[in-house]
Image (cartoon, rainbow over all chains, first blue to last red; front, side, top):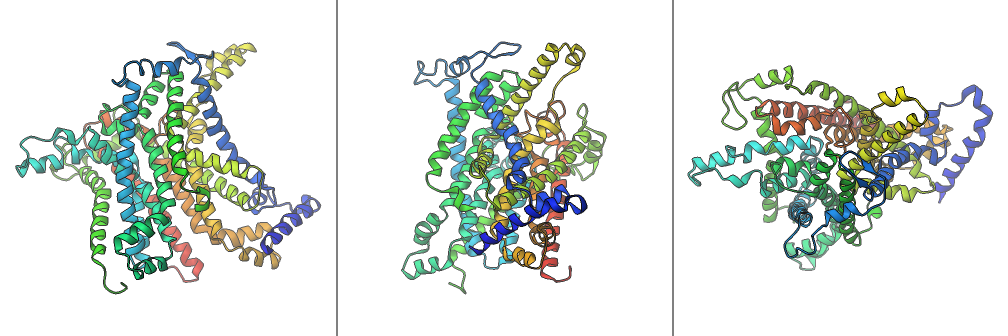
Length: 323
Length: 294
């Protein structure tokens, strides 16, 4: 309570005093912006403006253009469902054979589910180890940093760094051949679903670890002791105490992995040898070919799909409470 | 439980070690391979050790002016860093008070983080194309034919490109500021106020020094996220590409260890930034606790 009152006084005081001393020692605009003499909306205005100009308006335009017509040269601003129609053309009559669109979404969904499952399991146990088994705080920070540093380096580099390992003449193949385990290099190590999944897990496991670790660090250690005292085994404690209490972190991590993997086109492109389809790649290709309305329509569909999955997940947790 | 480590500890430790190997193994491979000898190829074995591919890289990569892209990315990264720090701090300060629409803005920010990057990129690309068309038709309507003929596009690294990257870095910045101010003890400010500090003095001499280490953290996020950004930048940069975009293109065309050398250099820049930031945070913390820096 007292804090709130103090805040009010602080807001009132200088605002009233300001006009009197304007010419002599008016604080510079920047100092007033930072210190809170200016109203909150002015402080937040530049931040909000970025999201209006570079996020909300572009999204609105994407929806709009997805309903426009086009020819080889330009987009024609006339309302039509053509792009959507063409995306799903023949999809229903040819069932159970899948059309290109369904195949692409299915393949993207498959990548997402696999990557999600792997990052979830790996992320959970890595975070669990860090949070509950590493005893000194310094060690905890050090190991956590070891996990997070790759996040701050280039994804493209981290992706291509798999090539000398998985390639036809790469480290794994040449070792296997030398040991006589296989006679010929294995072809499906690279430019395959496997390499795409490996690279995606490599890139995004961290998005799972950090939020789960964050949730776990808030768990009262006494709860674990109580669980053990009540006779639960280690496994039972993990499943019945740690997992439910880590749920917020699990959900937040999952949301990250979903949106990144569903929209990915760089990793699928590079590690799939530009042969594997993904929704992100379709959008990117259409955009490069200047076919804006279909690209926009695909974006809208992708967005709806992603939001649908997130909505389902967010029923499980209130994100705001976690900050 | 306190003294003896349970057996699960060793299993989990092994899993952790494997994970770290998985995380760093590939990066270390290309680090090693970038020192490949003159006649060496893209894979092992190493054909001697040399700086040959770094020297080749220094001369450039054929048609692609890689060093221009390098400088562009560095500059853009610094601009994004500064803007991310300043705008998120300002927004964070605003969120400590109340303002109309704060909830809506918060959800927009979260949405910006979770809308697939390719969608955001496409949207910005479209926006600027429509803007270009509009500018051209307006110019023609007013009879400014000279302008209309020479006008190409408003798309640029520092317009659409910068905006695209900010939609990615600012959410991280805001979330960090939330975390900072959630843990901030307001009594310090009250004490400053009681001692007669103006709001600006209290911010500059009390709040800022306390939160300084975390502010470096925001800067770290701002720079490194921009330095490596591909997905959001892909349709938004205009004619000139940033380094990671060039790099992505090169993955299909360059067939010698030059690309690894470039990877090593890029990662090197990231590591320098990370360690400078971490060292900065460390020394600020020491300074805060009053111990002299070691």
